[in-house]
Image 1 (cartoon, one colour):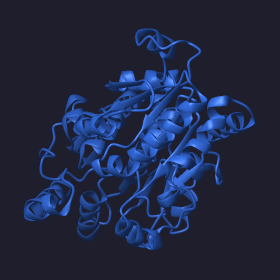
Image 2 (spheres, rainbow, N blue to C red):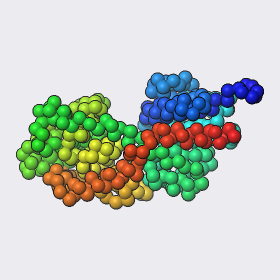
Image 3 (cartoon, helix red, strand yellow):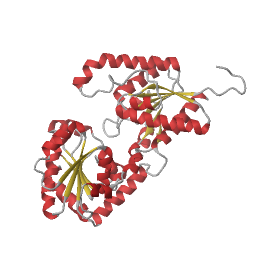
Image 4 (cartoon, one colour):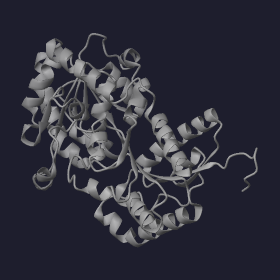
Length: 399
């Protein structure tokens, strides 16, 4: 490295650490935006760290693969703990050797936060950034106080996260909700209906029973019962269930003898086209409710877990709502049916006015517009806003 006038500036070194596929996707989007900004500004950057196939496709030479760290469940995790801890140590040693201008810890807090804690204990001068933060605002908020000891900054994806983390003294940048980048894919509804011979004026109901086997076991029977009740009032009713491969067999079994014409589709493009085509939806709460909102499909959301799981989790929850749209609005625009309320009659009663049209449907759509605006829809894409914040923090550390 030389300090002569006219020399090219030393590249900013940005270390990214992902621990599982969801973080790998976020990391790849962040890398593309970082590289775009570097090209635009003429400021060279060097991206190093740990990622999976998506980040490798974006140009990362990963320190190691994600095969060991991207596991869930006690039965899978426990045998791998020694190797996971070895990989945590390798990541820390790598950062100490490379001395990056910033380390961005992406998702997977059980893995990435161990790296941040270890790194801060060895070299507090290296800035650490969390993207996105764990949802400690929803339960066990005291964990934010601990995070303040080893995270210098947070890239928040929800608007209310910024004031929450700032209360604990953590610099926070609101960058927007990554799912809003899928808006452009919510299209093709008319062609979907034509392709599957669904009449343009037929009532199409999207049915989303969840993506985990327990969700399907607890929630699909209530959705099926609701359809049986709704079909009496809407004789032209057609249902569509998008399925994901790992639970497709459970959904097909649960959907036997369905009380209305039923179409099952696979793949994201077909799912998003179905959302665009649907008049309304009944859904297990989760990311899918945000996707339905992007498609402007009115919905009823529900959730039911085993009684013991719910009994253990309920006292730890600090939030009034389970759907993101309602959380952002601070009011219940989308009906939510939990536990005993996650039942056929209640789903049918709540979705009926959405299928008919009228003030309840219009009020929900208005709430969706308001929430999506707050989440950053139509603003600069979240990964680009995140990249700007990362470069700002790295440049500040270099100065």
